[in-house]
Length: 523
Image 1 (cartoon, helix red, strand yellow):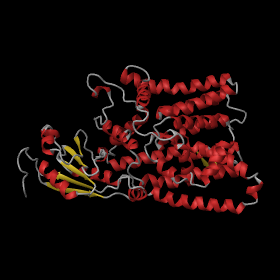
Image 2 (cartoon, one colour):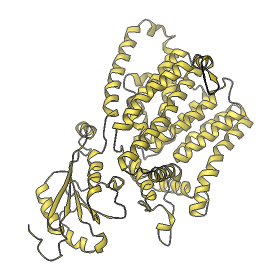
Image 3 (cartoon, rainbow, N blue to C red):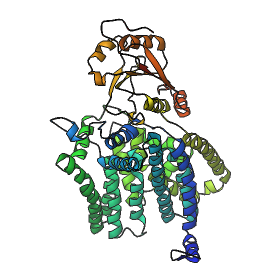
Image 4 (cartoon, rainbow, N blue to C red):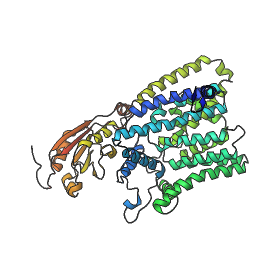
């Protein structure tokens, strides 16, 4: 039996290699929860994974510019915004192709996006297993790969549009090239490692801190020529891709990354100012205590292999020093931190007299860890994050003549941004309304007729009657359109910490605009 020149016997031998069979099984195991998340884990996780990627790319594909990132839409004095156009540009091209073949429904588009991300994330599992196999035994490598495949947060985050997770496969591929040969990377491997890590920088600028680590390690090891090859590899995709895009848009190389650095230096404490140990606590929490303590201990127990240990430590140290700390910023190194830490721990534990005499204790800890992990994994794979916001916009798809939206949030006074991608309405005005004492009718009168908001979104049901009354006075009688409830994950997060929003959203359309200075019409 042959298939395009490949015999069944040779195919069997291919999968009969020492690492091939477990690698194939791990890939299948990892694929299952990621496929479930791709179909069922709708919505978006954080502001950036939608509004800085999907909203921008989706608007470009429809001939608009939601964020006004493009210089020709910024007026006489355009300025870069500090965002990489590489990752969002890939989404733009994908949307253009999908719409050209007749796929235009936002939810279907996002299923395709999540499926592609699910497949992309399999690299993390496969390469993580190979790195562990190079550093340890087949048994430890298998357990390492199993954790990477089924860690509760990985399938959920893998299908999101976070640049912090989209860059991870590139970092893992670069790390593999650095440790592939036990005696150190060849010049070709150093070059390829640099190219992969340079591609990661194109996705997430802050991985530049990771990129410095292998170069320093090669210099410490006096591998001068390898360091040169590695540095050239990092620079190559930056010059060809990042610089090329900026030359086209702004007429000068590295315009966006320069603006990114300047903005972050000027806003070190604008958003968050967390203590230096914040990320250490995150690492102790994300891998499920007490198991996380073992991984933490393993990583800091030794510095080998230096070529991948040092870049992870450097990334962690610089982010710990910088005041603006958000949990997702650390995600690029989380899988590699785990591989290094877990392998080191297992190698120490299996040779420890104390642990060998307490095998049941470790089995009990593993049972506890996997039980918690599987329960949370199932919840996250079926979660619908930011459900009410997305469904409120979906409801507007069938509403004709939407000229603008009032986001009424006068109770909490925060007015979240609406994900217009799901509404299919671009180029409409959006008016956040958070002051219950302000004159809404006068504000709406300032809009031209073609963009005067005629749809209102009530965020939350607190004090709803009086809020509806104030909006009716400014916009005229309202006709209900839809009611969007929060998803199970949103309710759970609210239950864990009431600081998070748990929004029921009401959507209504004005039957006719109120005239400033007159009484609103009655039914």
